[in-house]
Amino acid sequence: MSVDPLPYCLAKPGAWQDEPWEGDIVAKVGDKIFAFLGDGTAIGLKCGRDRAEADELVLIHPGDVSASAYIGRYGWNSIRLDGAVPPDEIRELIDASYDAVVAKLPKSRRPKS
Image (tube, rainbow, N blue to C red; front, side, top):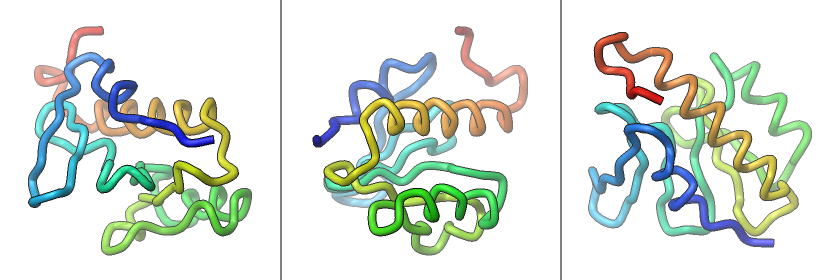
């Protein structure tokens, strides 16, 4: 089952859509990206503090989750939206990525929930 994560991402407090690179849609909170939405076939999310933590999800969903290019070493994964990862789990992963990014924002720039 395919998931459209953009509306879910943008419903988060303080979330907004940006296109920092032509054709690459992202969801941000403050000035930080919490979801790479790209072309709609996959979503890039912060899935751990580092590669080792993020690899736990790769082991659970091989073939549907992989380390993100360039930023994978920082705990970012790419998750296929039409794969075996259930929609509810994708929403939980979006929540966790959003929460991880918000936690790194200065308190004065965190959205009011």
